[in-house]
Length: 195
Image (cartoon, rainbow, N blue to C red; front, side):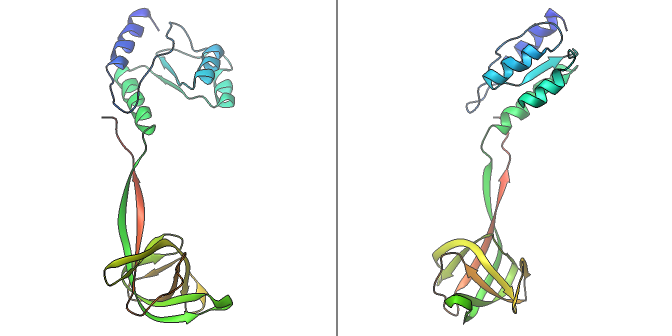
């Protein structure tokens, strides 16, 4: 809105530091947000930030068309928090693996086209089709892949809970033995914060 606000905002933004993401101010000026601001943001892969200003007519339509984000606010610390959040979104999320279920193989069944399914009892948690799993024999991981087949009796199902029997086939696994275990897991993405 005015030169003093612009300088204060720039100084505050330049205090944001990170060893993973660099903040660069490409251009700054006083006045309303224009279509030229949007075009410049498009060519440089930037976002547009407006502090206590309006936009000229047609800017929002141009921004949507060009897939450019425009952020506006009249409180400096909210703009700073917003910029920090956007910088944090550029970071790869932390991936946290969590066991979601365990099944013990009791019997082996041949199904159509020579495929093999492990007749199992879900001992804890739940087993979910198309999620990750490991085949474990005597404490050693023999194979890992997604659960490509999950059946209750003859029906395909998405999930089987603890205490129920089911048929399981893990992607890429050709042999199962009674006593083997299938340990299912899921990967949770945790958004990282700017350090």
